[in-house]
Length: 178
Image (cartoon, rainbow, N blue to C red; front, side, top):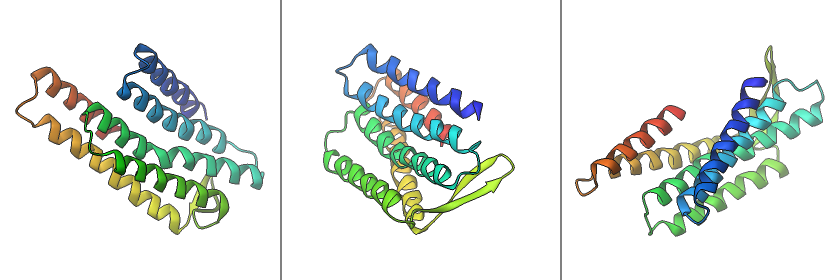
């Protein structure tokens, strides 16, 4: 599929561009992590969807898609905390990455995350199991909490108009992306 393939590389290039602007800035680093997660999802999906009818390859690429998907909300949360300069979230960030690691390990060691694939006219899509349901819940919690943090910061009276506008753009962009 050409659209997700092109979008994957544009996302990766955007992440690299932001990172190279200031390699030491934590929000630039975490934004690159977010872009790598999105790249992984889109790139692997672009290979999965038009895959030939080879069960092993379909299974591999379906699992690789969800490596990226698993880390999108976690890296978005990490980026949001960095952007907002919230310092008391380090343990939650570590815990989030550990949860993501659990999901990825179960993704490759059991059939409780993905168990085969559906075939549609446009290509293949993974059949989800119980662990995928937990990952979706994790996605909603981390992504939703990140949006709430951005909204809360935007409503603070102590921040400058420029910061409010920055928060509003970030909130709208990531809300639409969800």
